Length: 370
View 1 (cartoon, rainbow, N blue to C red):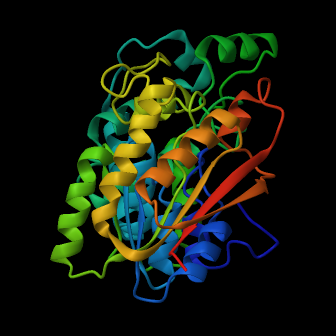
View 2 (view 1 turned 180 degrees about the horizontal axis):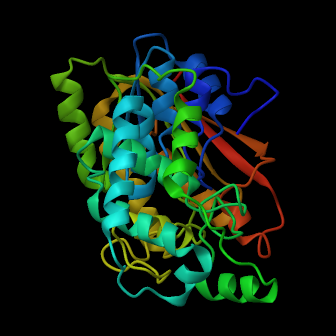
């Protein structure tokens, strides 16, 4: 957790890193765009807010950030950054969950993956946290849950799990086979002591000030109306920057990528693809185009007529062409500029690096008519 570079020497830098997420903006990128295209006091909108980087950047740079996120994992991360509970409340809640776990005699039967991933003591603790943390409603609970999600899996002895990638939940079958082949067993960790050290580190430089900003959990095609109502209630000025990165067509499956963290939030104990009304929106081309159009079109009423629209998207021809066409249709009077970006850290496309051999993404910037 220590960092000799000084990267985590402020409250903002320590909280900005919550949590591991493939589709995330780098914080420095969001800060640059927010401060370049808006003034202090402005409103910034992100209808695909992920872990809330754009919203948090706006909030910590004297603006008001507003967002919507479909994935509960990203939403919990956003809540913890924007509205963290006090360190005392989070520590008290952690110890309370630990005591409740100590009283539990057993946990329900779970797939074999869990006994290879976590020690019995950690399994018991996580199941208790899953059952008792009211992460949708309580600041202490969503803050603790966010920190649990961050540390739930990663390098062995640096996380609660056996050796595992931190950013993406691995396939259960693949993971178990790998652990067996390498004779790797879950570390016997005291979860309360382990997490208390992580809580202390996170709060060591204080808490960020971001109280006026917010992210709604749900579908942007529905919840953007709630964003508009809340902005009106707060008497916020029209939004002067829309900064976002939509899911990439055929790449993103937030349930599969985060299935283990979603289990901790109450989801099923497997990596099966999510079903229901969102199935296919990120893979079916027609549905994907409709999703983009609906979200950007429903964002229009929130935007100032001279608002800047800044979209980071996939370099692949299909996604880039579709995103460009939708933006031209929704914002026909704006001047469009496209910039190829080489991204050195893992992104959505890196999830499928065996299929995609380029690392560039594309920034589409729409500016007011001259």
